[in-house]
Image 1 (cartoon, rainbow, N blue to C red):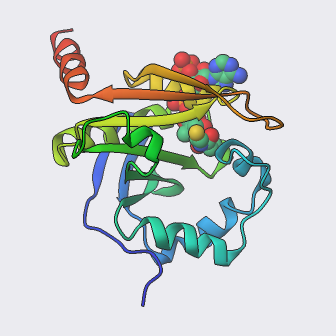
Image 2 (image 1 turned 90 degrees about the vertical axis):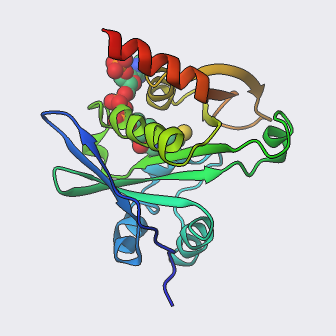
Length: 200
Ligand SMILES: CC(C)(COP(=O)(O)OP(=O)(O)OC[C@H]1O[C@@H](n2cnc3c(N)ncnc32)[C@H](O)[C@@H]1OP(=O)(O)O)[C@@H](O)C(=O)NCCC(=O)NCCS
């Protein structure tokens, strides 16, 4: 039996320089997931806690668990596997409580595991692709995402894709982050932004 439950959604996008494909994450990608999840520099940006490495068993738990009811994508750029991202049903009770019952609220989590690809605009592009799919393909009502104050690249990716900072929470100390930022994009905001962009 497979560890990661695959789906059948593949998204194509990018620009002249970077051809991006978001395809179903599968067990064949596990060697990449082991590598990235044992790289302290990658985990520094992904984990609130000071985790240096995840064992293979923990990697199986993370991706095996999340993929049962959510969409996990491999990120390929010009044919090279560079990271993964998830479109996940909101799982945090305090965030769910902010919205009416039955509202389709999802979160996106992202990791470019190949560090040479950080800061080249690729995160902004693939999140744009996933946001479009969330609203137009999955008919999500609200995307509600997070980052901590020290993660400027993550913050910029949300901002550049039209998300609004709606809540800032203090993180219990000691922790490398002082503040947790909550970013939100609603379907209406997404539609307005798309209409404005199509007029330019
Ligand atoms: C977060 C992540 C997906 C962002 O993707 P990316 O391709 O690196 O980001 P982009 O290149 O699209 O955008 C980065 C932005 O941050 C800006 N930036 C980067 N470092 C910065 C700094 N120290 N100060 C100010 N701005 C900075 C860049 O200039 C760019 O913004 P701009 O386009 O306005 O100039 C990627 O870096 C990553 O996976 N990092 C490791 C894991 C991680 O952080 N995951 C997210 C957890 S919340």
